[in-house]
Image 1 (cartoon, one colour):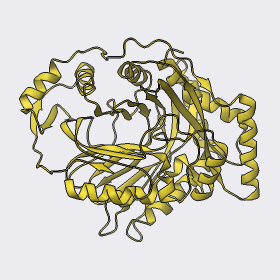
Image 2 (cartoon, one colour; image 1 turned 90 degrees about the vertical axis):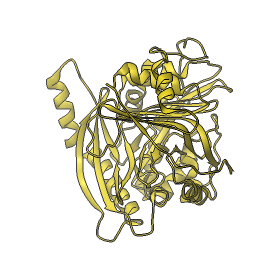
Image 3 (cartoon, helix red, strand yellow; image 1 turned 30 degrees about the vertical axis):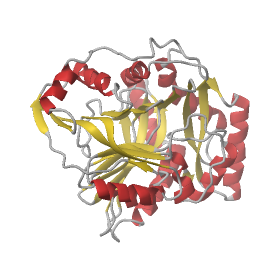
Image 4 (spheres, helix red, strand yellow; image 1 turned 60 degrees about the vertical axis):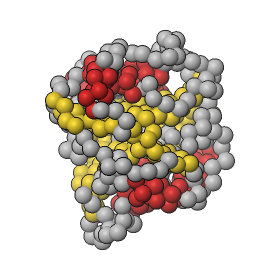
Length: 438
């Protein structure tokens, strides 16, 4: 574990500003000057559980970086010591700690299993107000620097050339593995498994800000994140919330069920959405993950408080229709956001059921570690309120290795058609390919 200490009391200055796409771009360009930064944008989606439209954290004033083993314990101690705003991520391979499933697959990118930082500078956008805090600058000076930042894409890596992604699986091999997984389901090893494949490119050099901006423009989803840890970059256009914790209540909103959009034909688009909610296969996937989330939350919530707030809700995004359910409960006395994440991690929508067994099968049949993919990026307030996404629909990039990848997957049940699952993966990767110019 590496940390920096000395807690401080954070204060905010409110600035009345009209928040426009140009201002958000200036905030992102300004934040990207720092080796550590996190930019979160909900792109104006109405979310009854949302707190902020945009959050910008720049510079690591203090930090904790740990790998699986005692990551949650060390993170809990760090958070208790700081009692400050924290931004960071949980990587998928924390499964080694939460479910005791070792990770032996190669790791081409190198994201740490867990990294959180207290930001040197922090901007919170809500309504027509920007709350600004800094440990090293006067807030008026900080706001002046943000407003003086370029309103177009910047970066030190030059213009991004088109990047061609190579699938790690040939279509035939993917179909074969799906059929093997269905045999596991038939034998009763599991009921559902989220199986992912990698698309990658080596020896590439990109402008991560430009790539994120393109991805966000193509697919402006409510849990979008631009996240940088030194040479490691994440451009994420996630539509999915993992966990929200506020005033002792926990919400999880798993996504299971995907259908294509048809924006040229509104009647056909409506038919596709209706077909999603009536699909036996998609409903089966969704109810399985809801049961898994209910079980996870029951481990850290007061008895009798876990309930399904919404089942089989269909929400439309620029690329796809998604089936989203909401499960909620009251956190048990004496427990906090770290306990909640540990009990639910990795999230059921990206694993399957039963969780431990499907994690073993994922380790057996996938080709690379997921790393930050299928993990969560988010923030925590000094009072312990927190909000984390699910890292999907994402591009990961290691600048020093010149290696870029994305992973896409789908939920496999007994009803799954391997060829159609492959097509669903391509659909989910379409926005990423477009953002990369392929």
